Image 1 (cartoon, rainbow, N blue to C red):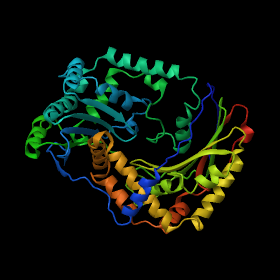
Image 2 (cartoon, rainbow, N blue to C red; image 1 turned 135 degrees about the horizontal axis):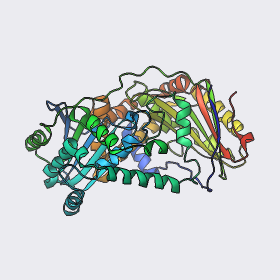
Image 3 (cartoon, rainbow, N blue to C red; image 1 turned 90 degrees about the vertical axis):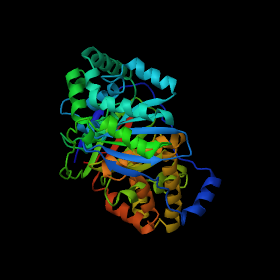
Image 4 (tube, rainbow, N blue to C red; image 1 turned 30 degrees about the horizontal axis):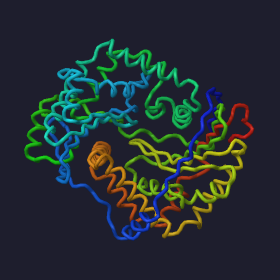
Length: 468
Protein backbone atom coordinates (compact mmCIF):
# COMPACT_ATOMS: atom_id res chain seq x y z
CA UNK A 1 0.00 0.00 0.00
CA UNK A 2 1.26 3.51 -0.85
CA UNK A 3 -0.12 6.69 0.67
CA UNK A 4 0.87 10.27 -0.11
CA UNK A 5 -0.37 13.46 1.55
CA UNK A 6 0.81 16.82 0.28
CA UNK A 7 -0.40 20.42 0.24
CA UNK A 8 -0.28 22.58 -2.91
CA UNK A 9 -1.18 26.28 -3.05
CA UNK A 10 -2.74 27.99 -6.07
CA UNK A 11 -5.40 30.27 -7.51
CA UNK A 12 -8.98 29.12 -8.01
CA UNK A 13 -9.67 27.05 -11.07
CA UNK A 14 -12.98 25.96 -12.48
CA UNK A 15 -12.81 22.62 -14.27
CA UNK A 16 -15.21 22.16 -17.11
CA UNK A 17 -16.95 18.83 -17.23
CA UNK A 18 -15.74 16.87 -20.26
CA UNK A 19 -18.42 14.86 -21.99
CA UNK A 20 -18.59 13.52 -25.52
CA UNK A 21 -21.87 14.34 -27.25
CA UNK A 22 -22.81 12.87 -30.61
CA UNK A 23 -25.54 14.30 -32.84
CA UNK A 24 -28.43 11.86 -32.82
CA UNK A 25 -28.80 11.69 -36.58
CA UNK A 26 -25.13 10.80 -37.01
CA UNK A 27 -25.43 8.06 -34.41
CA UNK A 28 -28.55 6.66 -36.00
CA UNK A 29 -26.96 6.45 -39.44
CA UNK A 30 -23.66 5.07 -38.13
CA UNK A 31 -25.39 2.45 -36.00
CA UNK A 32 -27.08 1.01 -39.10
CA UNK A 33 -23.73 0.75 -40.87
CA UNK A 34 -21.72 -0.55 -37.90
CA UNK A 35 -23.40 -3.93 -37.74
CA UNK A 36 -21.69 -5.18 -40.88
CA UNK A 37 -19.10 -2.54 -41.72
CA UNK A 38 -15.40 -3.10 -41.28
CA UNK A 39 -13.06 -0.33 -40.28
CA UNK A 40 -11.33 1.59 -43.05
CA UNK A 41 -7.66 0.59 -43.16
CA UNK A 42 -5.50 2.91 -45.26
CA UNK A 43 -3.61 1.15 -48.04
CA UNK A 44 0.17 1.17 -47.65
CA UNK A 45 3.47 -0.34 -48.77
CA UNK A 46 6.17 -0.98 -46.20
CA UNK A 47 9.88 -1.61 -46.64
CA UNK A 48 13.22 -0.86 -44.96
CA UNK A 49 16.50 0.67 -46.03
CA UNK A 50 19.81 -1.10 -45.39
CA UNK A 51 20.51 1.21 -42.44
CA UNK A 52 17.35 -0.01 -40.70
CA UNK A 53 15.07 2.95 -41.44
CA UNK A 54 11.48 1.71 -41.79
CA UNK A 55 9.46 3.32 -44.59
CA UNK A 56 5.67 3.30 -45.03
CA UNK A 57 4.10 4.71 -48.22
CA UNK A 58 0.40 5.63 -48.26
CA UNK A 59 -0.94 7.03 -51.53
CA UNK A 60 -4.01 9.28 -51.59
CA UNK A 61 -4.66 10.75 -55.01
CA UNK A 62 -7.75 12.66 -53.88
CA UNK A 63 -5.70 15.48 -52.39
CA UNK A 64 -2.80 17.44 -53.90
CA UNK A 65 -0.66 17.49 -50.81
CA UNK A 66 1.72 15.30 -48.82
CA UNK A 67 2.54 14.59 -45.20
CA UNK A 68 5.87 13.22 -44.01
CA UNK A 69 5.75 11.81 -40.47
CA UNK A 70 9.05 10.82 -38.85
CA UNK A 71 8.96 8.99 -35.50
CA UNK A 72 11.74 7.87 -33.17
CA UNK A 73 11.84 5.66 -30.07
CA UNK A 74 12.80 8.76 -28.10
CA UNK A 75 9.99 9.69 -25.73
CA UNK A 76 10.31 10.75 -22.11
CA UNK A 77 10.70 7.11 -21.06
CA UNK A 78 14.23 7.37 -22.46
CA UNK A 79 15.22 10.28 -20.22
CA UNK A 80 18.43 9.34 -18.39
CA UNK A 81 18.30 9.18 -14.57
CA UNK A 82 18.60 12.65 -13.09
CA UNK A 83 17.80 14.29 -16.45
CA UNK A 84 14.03 14.08 -16.61
CA UNK A 85 12.73 16.43 -19.30
CA UNK A 86 15.68 15.92 -21.65
CA UNK A 87 13.65 14.14 -24.35
CA UNK A 88 11.04 16.91 -24.44
CA UNK A 89 13.68 19.66 -24.50
CA UNK A 90 15.62 17.87 -27.24
CA UNK A 91 12.51 17.42 -29.35
CA UNK A 92 11.68 21.14 -29.21
CA UNK A 93 15.24 22.13 -30.16
CA UNK A 94 15.35 19.51 -32.91
CA UNK A 95 12.71 21.46 -34.84
CA UNK A 96 14.55 24.79 -34.86
CA UNK A 97 17.19 24.13 -37.53
CA UNK A 98 19.65 21.55 -38.83
CA UNK A 99 23.39 21.52 -39.32
CA UNK A 100 22.80 22.38 -42.98
CA UNK A 101 19.62 24.50 -42.91
CA UNK A 102 19.49 27.63 -40.72
CA UNK A 103 16.32 28.45 -38.81
CA UNK A 104 15.43 31.41 -41.04
CA UNK A 105 15.66 29.22 -44.15
CA UNK A 106 13.34 26.61 -42.63
CA UNK A 107 10.80 29.30 -41.85
CA UNK A 108 11.12 30.75 -45.36
CA UNK A 109 10.43 27.35 -46.95
CA UNK A 110 7.29 26.88 -44.85
CA UNK A 111 6.07 30.38 -45.65
CA UNK A 112 6.65 30.05 -49.41
CA UNK A 113 5.09 26.59 -49.92
CA UNK A 114 2.99 27.17 -47.77
CA UNK A 115 3.62 24.33 -45.35
CA UNK A 116 3.89 23.45 -41.70
CA UNK A 117 6.39 21.44 -39.68
CA UNK A 118 5.49 20.43 -36.13
CA UNK A 119 6.73 18.00 -33.50
CA UNK A 120 5.42 16.10 -30.51
CA UNK A 121 6.97 14.19 -27.61
CA UNK A 122 5.03 11.54 -25.72
CA UNK A 123 6.17 8.89 -23.26
CA UNK A 124 7.36 6.41 -25.91
CA UNK A 125 8.13 8.37 -29.07
CA UNK A 126 9.09 11.72 -30.53
CA UNK A 127 7.65 12.53 -33.94
CA UNK A 128 7.69 15.31 -36.51
CA UNK A 129 5.01 16.02 -39.09
CA UNK A 130 5.67 17.97 -42.29
CA UNK A 131 2.62 19.00 -44.32
CA UNK A 132 3.26 20.53 -47.75
CA UNK A 133 1.86 20.76 -51.26
CA UNK A 134 2.74 17.59 -53.18
CA UNK A 135 5.48 19.28 -55.23
CA UNK A 136 7.40 19.89 -51.97
CA UNK A 137 7.86 16.21 -51.08
CA UNK A 138 11.51 16.12 -52.06
CA UNK A 139 12.10 19.29 -50.04
CA UNK A 140 10.42 17.73 -46.97
CA UNK A 141 12.57 14.60 -47.30
CA UNK A 142 15.71 16.74 -47.63
CA UNK A 143 14.82 18.71 -44.49
CA UNK A 144 14.11 15.68 -42.31
CA UNK A 145 17.14 13.75 -43.54
CA UNK A 146 19.27 16.81 -42.79
CA UNK A 147 17.90 16.83 -39.25
CA UNK A 148 18.58 13.14 -38.82
CA UNK A 149 22.22 13.39 -39.84
CA UNK A 150 23.19 16.83 -38.56
CA UNK A 151 20.75 18.34 -36.06
CA UNK A 152 23.17 18.00 -33.17
CA UNK A 153 25.75 20.03 -35.13
CA UNK A 154 23.40 23.01 -35.14
CA UNK A 155 22.98 23.47 -31.40
CA UNK A 156 25.12 25.72 -29.23
CA UNK A 157 25.24 26.08 -25.47
CA UNK A 158 23.57 29.54 -25.53
CA UNK A 159 20.67 28.14 -27.61
CA UNK A 160 20.12 25.30 -25.16
CA UNK A 161 20.38 27.47 -22.07
CA UNK A 162 17.98 30.02 -23.57
CA UNK A 163 15.41 27.27 -24.20
CA UNK A 164 15.84 25.93 -20.66
CA UNK A 165 15.48 29.40 -19.16
CA UNK A 166 12.19 29.95 -21.02
CA UNK A 167 10.83 26.61 -19.78
CA UNK A 168 11.77 27.36 -16.18
CA UNK A 169 10.32 30.87 -16.39
CA UNK A 170 7.09 29.49 -17.83
CA UNK A 171 6.82 27.07 -14.92
CA UNK A 172 7.39 29.86 -12.43
CA UNK A 173 4.45 31.70 -14.00
CA UNK A 174 2.38 28.54 -13.51
CA UNK A 175 3.36 28.20 -9.85
CA UNK A 176 -0.09 29.19 -8.58
CA UNK A 177 -2.07 26.93 -10.92
CA UNK A 178 -3.94 24.29 -8.91
CA UNK A 179 -3.09 20.64 -9.49
CA UNK A 180 -0.05 21.47 -11.63
CA UNK A 181 1.93 18.78 -9.78
CA UNK A 182 -0.89 16.24 -9.68
CA UNK A 183 0.21 14.09 -12.62
CA UNK A 184 3.73 13.73 -11.28
CA UNK A 185 2.41 12.81 -7.84
CA UNK A 186 0.14 10.13 -9.32
CA UNK A 187 2.93 8.60 -11.42
CA UNK A 188 5.21 8.55 -8.38
CA UNK A 189 2.60 6.46 -6.57
CA UNK A 190 1.93 4.15 -9.53
CA UNK A 191 5.52 3.26 -10.38
CA UNK A 192 8.64 2.35 -8.39
CA UNK A 193 11.82 4.41 -8.45
CA UNK A 194 13.67 4.09 -11.76
CA UNK A 195 10.66 2.95 -13.81
CA UNK A 196 10.62 4.80 -17.19
CA UNK A 197 7.03 6.08 -16.80
CA UNK A 198 7.45 7.43 -13.28
CA UNK A 199 7.95 11.04 -14.40
CA UNK A 200 5.98 13.38 -16.64
CA UNK A 201 6.96 14.26 -20.20
CA UNK A 202 7.87 17.78 -19.12
CA UNK A 203 10.26 16.41 -16.54
CA UNK A 204 11.68 17.86 -13.35
CA UNK A 205 12.54 21.57 -13.18
CA UNK A 206 15.57 20.92 -10.96
CA UNK A 207 16.83 18.36 -13.48
CA UNK A 208 16.23 20.78 -16.36
CA UNK A 209 18.40 23.44 -14.72
CA UNK A 210 21.42 21.12 -14.91
CA UNK A 211 21.12 20.16 -18.59
CA UNK A 212 23.68 21.29 -21.16
CA UNK A 213 24.15 21.24 -24.93
CA UNK A 214 26.25 18.12 -24.46
CA UNK A 215 23.23 16.33 -22.96
CA UNK A 216 20.97 17.44 -25.81
CA UNK A 217 23.44 16.60 -28.57
CA UNK A 218 24.20 13.21 -27.03
CA UNK A 219 20.49 12.42 -26.90
CA UNK A 220 20.08 13.35 -30.56
CA UNK A 221 23.09 11.32 -31.63
CA UNK A 222 21.88 8.29 -29.68
CA UNK A 223 18.18 8.24 -30.53
CA UNK A 224 17.57 10.22 -33.74
CA UNK A 225 19.09 7.58 -36.03
CA UNK A 226 17.70 5.43 -38.90
CA UNK A 227 17.61 2.10 -37.06
CA UNK A 228 15.55 3.75 -34.31
CA UNK A 229 13.09 5.46 -36.65
CA UNK A 230 10.12 5.00 -38.95
CA UNK A 231 8.89 7.39 -41.64
CA UNK A 232 5.45 7.43 -43.22
CA UNK A 233 4.75 9.37 -46.41
CA UNK A 234 1.15 10.01 -47.30
CA UNK A 235 -0.60 11.85 -50.10
CA UNK A 236 -0.22 12.50 -53.81
CA UNK A 237 3.16 11.19 -55.02
CA UNK A 238 4.83 8.84 -57.46
CA UNK A 239 5.92 5.67 -55.66
CA UNK A 240 9.04 4.89 -57.69
CA UNK A 241 10.28 8.48 -57.62
CA UNK A 242 9.61 8.70 -53.88
CA UNK A 243 11.58 5.53 -53.19
CA UNK A 244 14.52 7.00 -55.07
CA UNK A 245 14.35 10.18 -53.02
CA UNK A 246 14.10 8.26 -49.73
CA UNK A 247 17.21 6.27 -50.63
CA UNK A 248 19.03 9.39 -51.85
CA UNK A 249 18.44 11.43 -48.72
CA UNK A 250 18.29 8.80 -45.95
CA UNK A 251 20.17 5.81 -47.33
CA UNK A 252 23.68 7.04 -46.52
CA UNK A 253 22.98 8.08 -42.92
CA UNK A 254 24.76 5.72 -40.46
CA UNK A 255 22.33 3.24 -38.90
CA UNK A 256 23.06 3.90 -35.24
CA UNK A 257 21.50 1.60 -32.64
CA UNK A 258 17.87 0.79 -32.02
CA UNK A 259 16.63 1.87 -28.61
CA UNK A 260 14.67 -0.70 -26.67
CA UNK A 261 14.06 -1.51 -23.02
CA UNK A 262 13.28 -5.13 -23.68
CA UNK A 263 10.46 -6.42 -21.55
CA UNK A 264 10.55 -4.84 -18.12
CA UNK A 265 9.81 -7.02 -15.08
CA UNK A 266 6.20 -7.03 -13.84
CA UNK A 267 5.25 -4.18 -11.56
CA UNK A 268 4.41 -4.99 -7.94
CA UNK A 269 0.72 -4.91 -7.12
CA UNK A 270 -0.59 -1.63 -5.74
CA UNK A 271 -2.91 -3.23 -3.24
CA UNK A 272 -5.35 -0.63 -1.90
CA UNK A 273 -3.27 2.50 -2.42
CA UNK A 274 -4.41 6.04 -1.71
CA UNK A 275 -3.14 9.56 -2.15
CA UNK A 276 -4.54 12.89 -0.94
CA UNK A 277 -3.79 16.34 -2.37
CA UNK A 278 -5.05 19.58 -0.86
CA UNK A 279 -5.57 22.47 -3.27
CA UNK A 280 -7.14 25.92 -3.21
CA UNK A 281 -10.11 24.85 -5.35
CA UNK A 282 -13.89 25.15 -5.08
CA UNK A 283 -14.74 21.55 -5.87
CA UNK A 284 -13.41 18.05 -5.25
CA UNK A 285 -12.01 15.47 -7.64
CA UNK A 286 -11.28 11.76 -7.52
CA UNK A 287 -9.10 9.53 -9.69
CA UNK A 288 -9.34 5.73 -9.70
CA UNK A 289 -6.39 4.11 -11.45
CA UNK A 290 -6.33 0.38 -12.20
CA UNK A 291 -3.20 -1.34 -13.61
CA UNK A 292 -3.96 -3.08 -16.92
CA UNK A 293 -1.95 -4.01 -20.03
CA UNK A 294 0.50 -2.51 -22.56
CA UNK A 295 -0.36 -1.33 -26.05
CA UNK A 296 0.14 -4.61 -27.89
CA UNK A 297 -1.70 -6.86 -25.40
CA UNK A 298 -4.63 -8.95 -26.62
CA UNK A 299 -6.97 -7.25 -24.10
CA UNK A 300 -6.10 -3.71 -25.19
CA UNK A 301 -8.94 -3.34 -27.77
CA UNK A 302 -11.54 -4.49 -25.23
CA UNK A 303 -10.23 -2.11 -22.55
CA UNK A 304 -10.27 0.80 -24.99
CA UNK A 305 -13.86 -0.06 -25.83
CA UNK A 306 -14.76 -0.39 -22.15
CA UNK A 307 -13.78 3.23 -21.56
CA UNK A 308 -16.13 4.33 -24.33
CA UNK A 309 -18.90 2.07 -23.02
CA UNK A 310 -18.65 3.50 -19.51
CA UNK A 311 -18.34 7.22 -20.24
CA UNK A 312 -17.77 7.89 -23.94
CA UNK A 313 -21.15 9.48 -24.58
CA UNK A 314 -24.24 10.76 -22.79
CA UNK A 315 -25.44 7.14 -22.81
CA UNK A 316 -22.32 5.84 -21.04
CA UNK A 317 -23.05 3.33 -18.31
CA UNK A 318 -21.54 5.58 -15.63
CA UNK A 319 -23.18 8.79 -16.76
CA UNK A 320 -26.79 8.39 -15.67
CA UNK A 321 -26.26 6.82 -12.20
CA UNK A 322 -23.22 8.92 -11.28
CA UNK A 323 -23.94 12.28 -12.92
CA UNK A 324 -27.64 12.58 -13.66
CA UNK A 325 -28.80 10.95 -10.42
CA UNK A 326 -26.01 11.80 -7.99
CA UNK A 327 -26.11 15.45 -6.87
CA UNK A 328 -22.46 15.35 -5.78
CA UNK A 329 -20.91 14.25 -9.11
CA UNK A 330 -20.71 16.77 -11.97
CA UNK A 331 -18.83 14.73 -14.59
CA UNK A 332 -17.12 11.39 -15.10
CA UNK A 333 -14.55 10.13 -17.57
CA UNK A 334 -13.28 6.59 -18.17
CA UNK A 335 -10.49 5.53 -20.48
CA UNK A 336 -7.66 3.08 -21.06
CA UNK A 337 -4.19 4.61 -21.29
CA UNK A 338 -1.64 2.25 -22.85
CA UNK A 339 2.06 2.62 -23.46
CA UNK A 340 4.67 0.30 -24.88
CA UNK A 341 5.49 -1.22 -21.48
CA UNK A 342 2.25 -1.05 -19.50
CA UNK A 343 -1.17 0.51 -19.19
CA UNK A 344 -3.76 1.80 -16.73
CA UNK A 345 -7.53 2.20 -16.75
CA UNK A 346 -8.66 5.56 -15.38
CA UNK A 347 -11.99 6.67 -13.94
CA UNK A 348 -11.99 10.41 -13.19
CA UNK A 349 -14.82 12.12 -11.32
CA UNK A 350 -15.40 15.84 -10.83
CA UNK A 351 -17.48 16.42 -7.71
CA UNK A 352 -19.01 19.30 -5.80
CA UNK A 353 -17.24 21.00 -2.93
CA UNK A 354 -19.61 19.32 -0.46
CA UNK A 355 -18.98 15.79 -1.76
CA UNK A 356 -17.65 13.20 0.63
CA UNK A 357 -15.39 11.18 -1.64
CA UNK A 358 -15.66 7.92 0.37
CA UNK A 359 -19.41 7.97 -0.34
CA UNK A 360 -18.78 8.64 -4.04
CA UNK A 361 -16.23 5.83 -4.13
CA UNK A 362 -18.74 3.44 -2.58
CA UNK A 363 -21.27 4.34 -5.30
CA UNK A 364 -18.70 3.70 -8.00
CA UNK A 365 -17.71 0.36 -6.48
CA UNK A 366 -21.29 -0.82 -6.29
CA UNK A 367 -21.98 0.25 -9.86
CA UNK A 368 -18.84 -1.39 -11.26
CA UNK A 369 -19.71 -4.65 -9.54
CA UNK A 370 -23.23 -4.58 -11.02
CA UNK A 371 -21.88 -3.76 -14.48
CA UNK A 372 -19.51 -6.70 -14.26
CA UNK A 373 -22.44 -8.97 -13.41
CA UNK A 374 -25.62 -7.95 -15.21
CA UNK A 375 -25.93 -4.37 -16.46
CA UNK A 376 -24.28 -4.64 -19.89
CA UNK A 377 -26.14 -5.93 -22.96
CA UNK A 378 -24.88 -6.82 -26.44
CA UNK A 379 -26.87 -3.89 -27.79
CA UNK A 380 -24.84 -1.53 -25.59
CA UNK A 381 -21.61 -2.94 -27.02
CA UNK A 382 -22.85 -2.55 -30.61
CA UNK A 383 -23.60 1.12 -29.95
CA UNK A 384 -20.17 1.54 -28.38
CA UNK A 385 -18.51 0.05 -31.45
CA UNK A 386 -20.19 2.75 -33.51
CA UNK A 387 -18.59 5.38 -31.30
CA UNK A 388 -15.20 3.65 -31.60
CA UNK A 389 -15.44 3.75 -35.39
CA UNK A 390 -16.37 7.43 -35.32
CA UNK A 391 -13.51 8.14 -32.93
CA UNK A 392 -10.95 6.44 -35.18
CA UNK A 393 -12.33 8.25 -38.23
CA UNK A 394 -12.03 11.57 -36.39
CA UNK A 395 -8.39 10.89 -35.50
CA UNK A 396 -7.52 9.72 -39.00
CA UNK A 397 -9.17 12.55 -40.85
CA UNK A 398 -7.90 15.52 -38.90
CA UNK A 399 -6.26 18.26 -41.01
CA UNK A 400 -7.67 16.91 -44.24
CA UNK A 401 -6.98 13.29 -43.41
CA UNK A 402 -3.30 12.87 -44.20
CA UNK A 403 -1.86 14.18 -40.96
CA UNK A 404 -4.01 11.94 -38.77
CA UNK A 405 -3.56 8.85 -40.93
CA UNK A 406 0.21 9.23 -41.24
CA UNK A 407 0.63 9.88 -37.51
CA UNK A 408 -1.37 6.79 -36.51
CA UNK A 409 0.21 4.56 -39.15
CA UNK A 410 3.73 5.63 -38.24
CA UNK A 411 3.21 5.28 -34.50
CA UNK A 412 1.64 1.86 -34.98
CA UNK A 413 4.53 0.78 -37.18
CA UNK A 414 7.24 1.99 -34.81
CA UNK A 415 5.71 0.58 -31.63
CA UNK A 416 3.98 -2.59 -32.86
CA UNK A 417 5.53 -3.21 -36.30
CA UNK A 418 2.11 -2.72 -37.93
CA UNK A 419 1.04 0.48 -39.77
CA UNK A 420 -2.53 -0.87 -39.58
CA UNK A 421 -2.43 -1.36 -35.79
CA UNK A 422 -5.04 1.25 -34.84
CA UNK A 423 -7.44 0.25 -37.61
CA UNK A 424 -7.02 -3.41 -36.69
CA UNK A 425 -7.70 -2.65 -33.03
CA UNK A 426 -11.08 -1.07 -33.83
CA UNK A 427 -11.89 -3.88 -36.26
CA UNK A 428 -11.29 -6.38 -33.44
CA UNK A 429 -13.75 -4.42 -31.32
CA UNK A 430 -16.46 -5.27 -33.86
CA UNK A 431 -16.31 -8.87 -32.63
CA UNK A 432 -16.68 -8.03 -28.94
CA UNK A 433 -19.88 -8.56 -26.95
CA UNK A 434 -21.31 -7.93 -23.50
CA UNK A 435 -19.51 -10.91 -21.99
CA UNK A 436 -16.16 -9.53 -23.18
CA UNK A 437 -16.88 -6.20 -21.47
CA UNK A 438 -17.91 -7.91 -18.24
CA UNK A 439 -14.73 -9.99 -18.36
CA UNK A 440 -12.60 -6.82 -18.62
CA UNK A 441 -14.37 -5.34 -15.59
CA UNK A 442 -13.90 -8.49 -13.51
CA UNK A 443 -10.33 -9.00 -14.65
CA UNK A 444 -8.95 -5.49 -14.32
CA UNK A 445 -11.22 -3.15 -12.33
CA UNK A 446 -10.35 -4.66 -8.98
CA UNK A 447 -10.72 -2.54 -5.88
CA UNK A 448 -8.13 -4.80 -4.25
CA UNK A 449 -5.43 -3.52 -6.66
CA UNK A 450 -5.83 0.16 -7.50
CA UNK A 451 -4.85 3.72 -6.58
CA UNK A 452 -7.48 6.20 -5.41
CA UNK A 453 -6.50 9.87 -5.55
CA UNK A 454 -8.51 12.46 -3.63
CA UNK A 455 -8.15 16.14 -4.52
CA UNK A 456 -9.89 18.29 -1.92
CA UNK A 457 -10.01 21.95 -0.87
CA UNK A 458 -7.28 22.95 1.53
CA UNK A 459 -8.15 21.87 5.06
CA UNK A 460 -10.87 19.41 3.91
CA UNK A 461 -8.99 16.12 4.19
CA UNK A 462 -11.92 14.68 6.13
CA UNK A 463 -13.71 14.51 2.75
CA UNK A 464 -10.94 12.41 1.18
CA UNK A 465 -10.57 8.66 0.78
CA UNK A 466 -7.92 6.97 2.85
CA UNK A 467 -7.11 3.33 2.27
CA UNK A 468 -5.30 2.17 5.44
